[in-house]
Amino acid sequence: MNELSSYAFSPLREGDIALYRGSGNGLAPILLVAAEETSLGCVERLEHEYALKAELDADWAARPVALTRYDDRMTLVLEDPGGVTLDRLLGQPLDLSQFLRIAIPVAGALRRVHERGLIHKDIKPANILLDAASGGVWLTGFGIASRLPRERQAPAPPEVIAGTLAYMAPEQTGRMNRSVDSRSDLYALGVTLYEMLTGQLPFTAADPMEWVHCHIARQPVPPNERVAGVPGPLSAIVSSKMPRGPGVIWPHRRVSAWRARWVGPAADPGETLRPGARD
Image 1: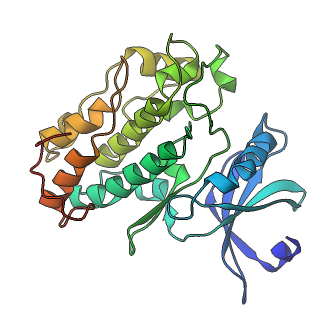
Image 2: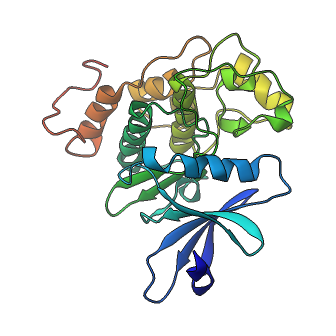
């Protein structure tokens, strides 16, 4: 895309793989993912995400458009659905209505990823775009996504494990006798929802090995014990996404029912379930 030089870019996410929003006079808005080429595997992640473009849907993902060099870096151009990254809203607990308005479509978008036979493997607030006005949610960061229904993570030093340690499922560390599958994404979703409810991560760590230990061996304090006013059943749902043993499926209907009670009409037309009526 030669016209990239005509865009003005503003940062949405910093890091080895940075995300920018591009705008320009008479130009379609875009997102630009730029890789730090000196960092291990960053360029390969952009190439992999671009290769998935036919499997990603604009209803729930920021779809790749082009893979090109710009400003002496390898970059991936994405369609821009709008919105901001979820991490910009965090740092303090979200009120319950805002939490549910975001959590339901995020869970729905992840469900669509799994229906396409993909495992994202890097679910976190910085990889979630949301538009508060429309209620739309789109996932980004598919650079390490897998087409396999399950795979075994080989043991490796924590510093080089692909993914984000603060949100990583225990099996992704390569230190558990369990395959990486869609439940690994649900664990990362649970960490994200926990952070939304409480304003903080379930664990803190000083180094990569301590992060690995936290996810494998520690139990998080339930959200309703950290923040007053979080309903017990909702706290239990979020905590259930971070099991030490085999994971469980996302109880979408139960959370939809809580949304109906606390926010308004449920996301699914005709949904009239009472909170906790069924999973």
